[in-house]
Image 1 (spheres, rainbow, N blue to C red):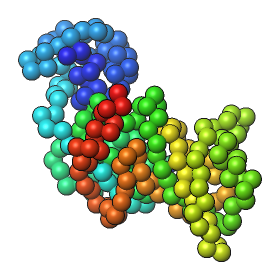
Image 2 (image 1 turned 90 degrees about the horizontal axis):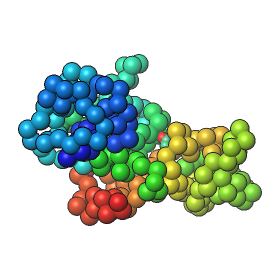
Image 3 (image 1 turned 30 degrees about the vertical axis):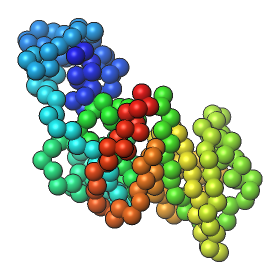
Image 4 (image 1 turned 120 degrees about the vertical axis):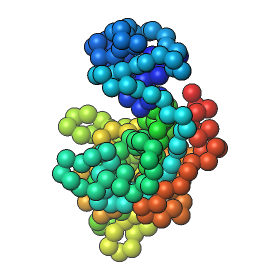
Length: 234
Ligand code: URA
């Protein structure tokens, strides 16, 4: 196996980033400083990064979680806040596929398969992410058109979004917003640009995987079919 694939499968980083880490001289194979492009025998060779041995998981875990509002997506939060990993009862070291903001709720994947995490998060594949967005007040047709065409933020056009008006209850408006990129705080920034205040932001779908009826704070394994949807896009 290529060393960068081995490292990325362990969850270290994407293959490209792993190449950079190898170049920086932090990776050793059987005690020798490794070079980019080298092949390893993952069953026999001892690989270390910064002196710590890297091993591949023997069993892969793929979960969907309904992240509640008020949880961070980092492994340990520097401000001591609750993290999504407090919600998962497993001895396996898992990481999240991408992130949701502290105050965003909804669907997020957890896995120990670094290659899967990199695939789902990779911008090349444009996997759709659907959000349910509730904003204060009513939305004008012209505002919907701006979101659909890509809002302009500090002179730079953000990606287009598929936007559907779901309901206006006389106070707030509920919308479905689908994006296929994962820029930081992308949805909040889009609504900020048009001066709308978000009351609730919830991710309800990634690719073919829906949040469905999964309760807040609960996890459920992804099905073979759900995993295959991403793997077959390669
Ligand atoms: N867009 C955001 O602004 N925040 C999220 O958590 C996800 C998408």
